[in-house]
Amino acid sequence: MAVQLLRSFGLCLLMLAIGGPFFSTQAQAHGGLALAEDMCRLTIGPYNMHFTGYQPDETRNKEFCEDIPKTGRTVVVLDYMEDALRPLTTEVRIIKDTGSEQDLEAITILHLPPKVYPSGSVNFEYDFAQPGKFVGMVTVGDTKELVSRFPFSVGETKMWLPPTYFLIAFAGVAVLAVIFFAMRGRNKASGSSVS
Image (tube, rainbow, N blue to C red; front, side):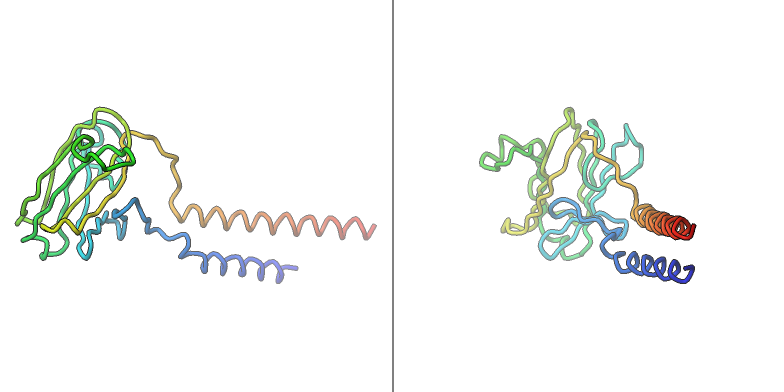
């Protein structure tokens, strides 16, 4: 009986180990924005930028990667990850997410015109007065072919999900509980059939 229990437990651990990649801690975010290796990376064609957002009045120096937790003054910093970006122009635009980009100027709330940033860092500040959904657009180069779009929300609460290791631990405890109660039920059934 104990051997069967150990085999079942071992099988469950094996399944969790195999399933580990499906519970990866690397999270794919919206559009061209992804969280990788504890760093928020914006992909624009073959190039990458490190994206960091702050709300100094609300959360001091706590960084966010995609959705902006609250309304208010927000500082965004884009750092080039490749030196090849330094001689190219970079344009940044924040628009209201209306589902259409027909009249881009009408829905634009922030626009940094194309400019070369030889320092390799683009930063800007905007005061989001109202919660809502927006789209960030970063365009690199004069041809306007390399564009990254990433939708994000401001001040909208989201359901909190625990880190991956909590989910795996919970699954392990659940499997052990199922095995325990199955064994307990089997022992009761065999005990009652004996009498």
